[in-house]
Image (cartoon, rainbow, N blue to C red; front, side, top):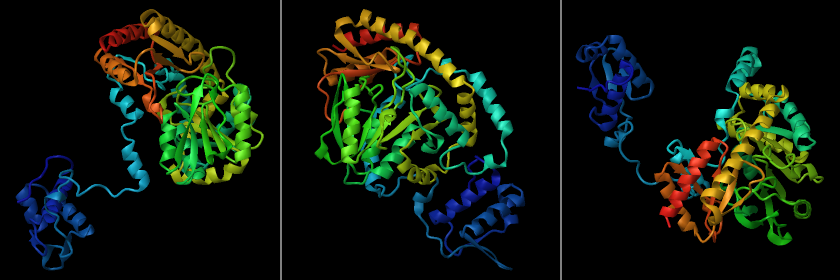
Length: 484
């Protein structure tokens, strides 16, 4: 007698129950099953239900049908005991992973894990990298999305071009010329599924297992982990008030990852002498520089800085941009501006990663950029971010005063808090005490390759109102006092 689960279509329930009985050994090899009519009467279902289940099991090789004789369990079936039960039991032994797979598991307790664990649970969430979703022009975006959906033709339902839609790449090239003084054309641009895919493509195409890559110290852990998965070794380079120093010529570095417009997470801006020195080093050593301009739209003293790529004359800089920090994370649209020598290989590698980025979203983003809506939104956001930034700085000064020093406040959507007379372990205690008070704050320790000497926090403010910022900082001060 088989037992139905009560979940899903009846023919599927019968199929699963019979398959489980076969795999567990309850129905032995060669055993004759009742006719579909008899089983239907036994289960009080229609004969069509049992016929569909039998047909599926015969197609998958669990049963065989003998003309004039009946239906039998196939001789080739290997019973698996209790382990065969759907969604139950433990797998036998650890998974056999590649070296890259093992590195993923080793690094699973990462910054992302901490951020995701707290997501949506804190009333006052100072998580860095979260854009101001409440300010986004949702209705305008929906109208544009609907208009593009209505315009779709047959080509839009096929695989998109490897480099992305020309209309978006054209719009981006014009936008970068206006906003960043970056002279490029559509042929140099490859659309990617967010900046993280851009990092992954660069790692796969430019790093071998025995290579070395330069990473800022502290620096973006998402880049460091992706590069490390190739087997390449990280070379940490300390960041000061002028940004990252010029690497040594004899370091054997193939790729340098930098955030020159607003160093992540310290907020330092790479000085012009160091920019020129870094470009000269890349030219001499034959290394590539991956410039991540993750929040370059937000600069509060003067215009946004021209990127390192704008100074590149030797084709050594790969420029990485993203819409996630301005628009919304689920958009998953980023872009690479490549040296011409690298365009062909990146364009060929992109379809191997995901088969293409949504043409509908690309077309809508192109409309948003070319119509001027994107730049209008950025200008409005910049004004609101100034207000929130000032609210944060005032609140920190009033509630924490001499306990902390603030770095990186001239640009971007976060600041770095350096706590005086507090160790990284003390920061962990403050983070825990703040969470109990409904405040999400995040230690900067995961951004270091080597253990940091002082306690630091990365504090994002883009997604919070000034009132929420002030309340959150007051509670953070209470948590710091409680964790003393």
